[in-house]
Each structure stands twice: as structure tokens, then as C-alpha cells.
Image (cartoon, rainbow, N blue to C red; front, top):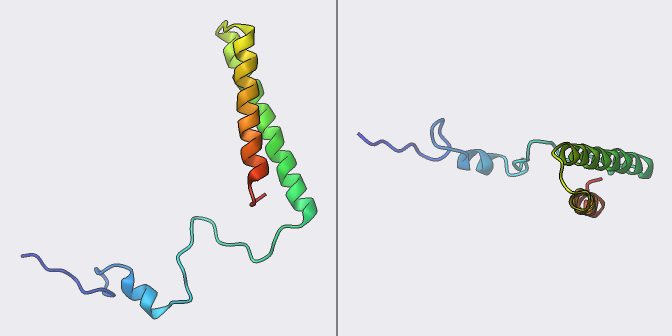
Length: 95
């Protein structure tokens, strides 16, 4: 027996929920912010994130040096990784 539930019922999915409450839109894992961050808060968040980029680069360099990788390759990998992560950070509109 194949019984399909009607939309909006307990087994039917979300279509009925959206029709009953159109003002409640589904959100991601984090709720939307009610206000924009202040300039100081954004600067502090970018500073913390930049510190994280430096930490990732240091850890990556330590791993590569520990594996006896050539110095120029270590420098290249750390440089490219840092630039890419910094570009992602500074292009973000969330921070």
C-alpha cells in the first residue's frame, strides 16, 4: 500500500507550514542579525581572524619543516595560503 500524505499534514512536509506563516522564512544555522556590527566590533573580528590566518601559516610551516621540505617550497606554500585566506577574510561582508 502506497499512501501519500497531503501537503501540510504531519507527514506531508513543509509546504503547508510556509503557506500558513509566509512571514517566517527558513533561516540557516545562525539566525539573522538584528543590527549591523559597529566599526570597532568589525575591526576586532578581523584582527582575531587575521591572527587565525597567522596561526594556520605557522602550523603549516612547522609541519612542512618537520617533514624536511625544501625551504623555498615552505615559503611558497605559506605565502600562497596566507594570501588566499586573507583575501577571503577581507572580501567578506560579514566581518
